Structure formats: structure tokens, C-alpha cells
Image (cartoon, rainbow, N blue to C red):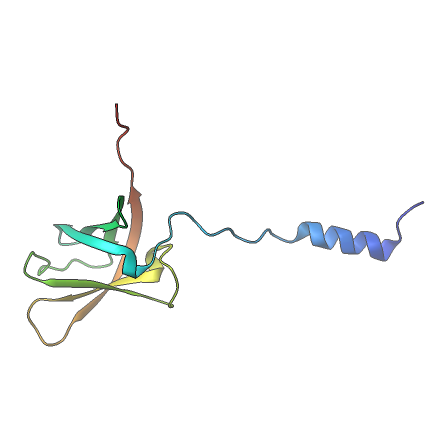
Length: 115
């Protein structure tokens, strides 16, 4: 028995749908950021949870990033942080007005293999 043309078309359209994207294991919540280390005026490294580390490249350099500055992060869009567009830096160098800086790139820092 041959399938009807509408049934075949419905099957083909179902198979052509993209699979739902699985959540990336590289996603995290802002609340999970435990530590921030300034590398240079444009680069920060954050520790997330117990052991994960990410390097954030800011969209523009910030000359006042230093140990006395207040550095925080805000999610953009309200969800988990899965890419640079999902997070921005909020910093203060003792001024009343915080500076908001978009993140241009975020990469996971891989640990070297242990012997």
C-alpha cells in the first residue's frame, strides 16, 4: 500500500524541521560567577561555580579596571549566559554613575590535562 500524497508531505515537512537546540553546557547564570580577575583594560577572567573559567573580551577598553574598582555583571535578556550578547559588565571606579560595557567575546578557558 502506498502512502497518500498529503501523508507523505506531512512526514517530509516533519523531518525537515530543525531539532530543538539543546542547552549548551557552556551556559551559566550571572549568580554563579564567583571570582573576577582583570587581565588588562579589555580582558577579564571569571570563575563560574567551583572550577569553570571564562575569558571575557570587552567591546571597548576600560582604563579604570583595577583591584579597587567595583565590577559586576548583568544578564541581557534575562536568561542564562550562553554567548557574549547575553552579558554586560557594570563597573564603578568610585563614581556615582556606573559604567556599562558590552562584552564582545566570551570563551571558556580549558584546564590543561592533569598528569
